[in-house]
Image (cartoon, rainbow over all chains, first blue to last red; front, side, top):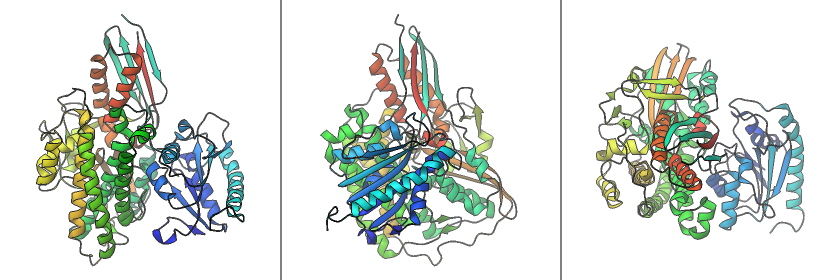
Amino acid sequence: MIVGKRTSQDLTSKILVIGVGNMFRSDDAAGYIVAHSLNARALPETTIIEESGEGAVLMESWKDVEAVVLVDAVSSGGKPGTVHRFDAHNDVIPSRFFRYSTHAFSVAEAVELARVMKRLPSKMIIYGIEGKNFQAGVGLSPEVQQSVPTVIQSIIQDVESFTAKGSMHA
Amino acid sequence: MKNRTIKVDYLARVEGEGALFVRVKGDKVVETQLKIFEPPRFFEAFLRGRKFTEAPDITARICGICPVAYQMSSIHAMEDICGVRVEGQLRALRRLLYCGEWIESHALHIYMLHAPDFLGYQDAIQMAKDHPEEVKRGLQLKKVGNDIVNLLGGREIHPINVKVGGFYKLPTKKEMQQLAERVRGARDASLETLHWVATFSFPNFEKDYEFVALRHPTEYPFNEGRLVSNKGLDIEIRQYDDHFVEEHVSHSNALHSTLKARGSYFVGPLARYSLNFDRFPANVQEAAREAGLGPTCSNPFKGIVVRAVETLYACEEALRIINEYETPEKAALDVQPQAGIGYGCTEAPRGILYHRYRNDDKGFIHDAKIVPPTSQNQKTIESDLRDFVAGHLDDSQDQLTWKLEQSIRNYDPCISCATHFLKLDIIRE
């Protein structure tokens, strides 16, 4: 497993986990915190990175990998702490879902633009953790904090399913 | 007389979120308000009690689009306090880093946020279906900006390699040569971009703005210069607070900046361009003229063309710096803490970004003031929208809403620097 910023030397990883967020915007840090917590675990063939969610950078980050798991905080009006899971190949990602990014061209736009331009990885799972407070500040709301282990567990299962025999290209 | 209400909950393709409220009574626009909801002073409070060396990394977190600008304004302010001047190759590398940020930010705005308005698409995703080559070029151009920031800053978003006095780690000549290859490609792409946006149609809308930008004796400005305007302002950066004031307005949590002497003013690409056209190299001036621009530009809709000119310049300047690069002996000057007040102002992609700090003799920050470009432009944006609505009252609700959204995007407001939420309400009584 490689942690942190990928370089051209470590493109051998087939799986990329991306934690998106802003650590100074309260619950918007949820994606970062999930990625950080995953760092301590050994995931095979996996690179874990953190991004601010700028769309063009996201598209670049996944261009050479086969499978991506992306996790970000969302605001869709649901109960704080709710975990939404999308399979990018089956679901359209609602752009307003991820609008609490600081970016106008962000997660949803990157996924949809990649779909149009045929640049989606062959497997792509997106987690949205429903946030409560996106004001400037540090620290997660308790409801969001409680969801972090659930998402981590689910991501581990995703990675295991990606690496199960026959599911990845040699 | 029509009584209508237009309501749009979310204004897309603007960095961050805020709200626009327009009230029309009969045939008169009686009110325009750009509303800002976020308490803006979190970072200024967060910086108090921190070491002066932490300011670049903390302020870089304020904005994912222009972290370099925050770093640069903060390090210049800290070096001002500590009596240090960074020169030579280290200074050139800072300019190169800034080139990367301008390329990234301008390419993103031109292709992903603004071009769809001119070509009649809902967004870049729809535009990509009909114009895949253009979108690819935009992404490619933006990536080279990322590559520059990545090499010098350590990573594209929130660079961590910048420090007071210089850098933590320097690029090798080989890395710079590899970068040059990509920047040459970006230069070609930026010229194609300029030719492309020059073909768009622009509403006839010009105003007599007071433009404010940095002006340097020889360079198109990034990090240094005097603060000048086309209406007589010509001051040192440290005199900023004598001439500009931030006002609380009831409808917004952000502060509106005004010039004490004359009120609203306008910062950003149009201002920089109009005050510094003579600082472009001859080939960039020529490209701008070929794209239909004169030495000044007062039509905010043509901001997309000016951004393309600045992107071309950033590529040219990056190549010049890379070609002249010699690895400095030290990555950074030794900077000892000093007590005092320091000032920094640099040209973020969206305009001047002012920082002021007061430190003690151990280097702890006691007071911080940060004025982002978008809060400086807010009053001008409100006033422009008011004039624009007044000239388009016969438009349908949808048309007017579309045009207003486009108008707001002219300024490329980075509301995430100043705020978080943008809604659009047009009420016709």
